[in-house]
Image (cartoon, rainbow, N blue to C red):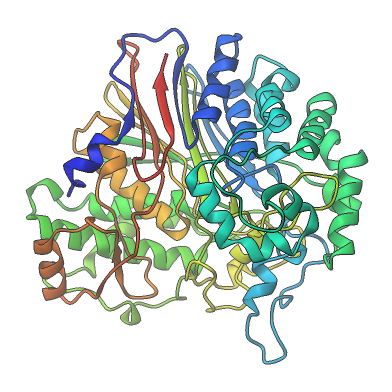
Length: 552
């Protein structure tokens, strides 16, 4: 797989290979969140406790990408092998309707599903924090949330990326006085040196810490959320919040050659699409193919996996999905039969719905504790700063995950993904997501990985998985590999700067692919490699952003 230039590798945040660590390994998108996780491990917590602490800290220090006003998926494998998946994805309020974002002309009005309170689903992350802590943590919620409460109370200096994103979302933040008071400086994007203090958020986190789930989904916090949303044009009820539950689901399992794959089930589309693509590619000896043919075959597998994503997948509590078929080797063999090694397939020649967009501002972290408990977690508010709306007095910046539904069958979302009736809006339903937290095993080697990136999440995790499957035990290789992507519709191979070499580009175009370079490197993979037999760990944080990966 093509690597990024050497200058990029120099900037990689990675831990050295360590003999059995005393605490474990954490890779997250922000140094303060990684530090919060280690504080909890040092206090006697395990990977589940650390996951709660890292999640809550990211809600404070990386509000551009996640928060307690958003949702999360937690893929957990406990010492001894037991695996579980906590679905804390947002739900549509009971007032939601199939055509709520369509204009008089019957076309989607994007502004409605992206900005303001009408764009927000009922938050799931707080319930996820409670569930993860109860299910497998050692410490109480109050201890696990204490680093985040301290960060919100005392404040911190946001990094350059945060400040840039405030500028990009200034209009949406300014439209909500409570959000503007927190994130803007006298109505303008703040400059370097600005200290972000979030006392209302600290108070909300304290209520959650003291009371557990009722501390967010009822009482003062629920009242502030509902009153604020409804006063600004939304339509939530106290019952929408009181009825919310994080759901424990069975993770998906698959195998690619010698690699065991544990990944996210629906309402994540990522795990299904990842397994479909791997099953297709298992029929090829990729290591024996020339670089262009290898990439061509990977693109064709992506094309077919994303086609099925659009056609079949949705909330498992609302939609019957042919998951056994989609995950089978025989089905993949049928898809593989339609792939030519000497010519690109036209997406228009394949049956099914086109695929639509999803928000890119998501975050991921990976944790392995010294005992061998593992958490791979992906969290999101959708686009940067979610809806931009904050109910007064709550400190909670709400998501705009309602845009991840299919507002109209065949119409693309913010990430150009297209959906069908399976992902249509309905009261109480969870929107489809591409978030793909994943755990891999190859003999005595374990890989824990995931990334933000909207619709590109699945293709990034696929490329990281293939790197591990080829024998790479260095997470620095998984997070730095050059990235390219195809999602069935539009029928274009997107690639990041330096993601494909000149020979790759020429060769793929000769095969009939249309290529388009995106304007920036994308993704923010956080990964850990672990050798259970020796206890050795190594962690890596994507150099495309400024995360923190450490082994202690």
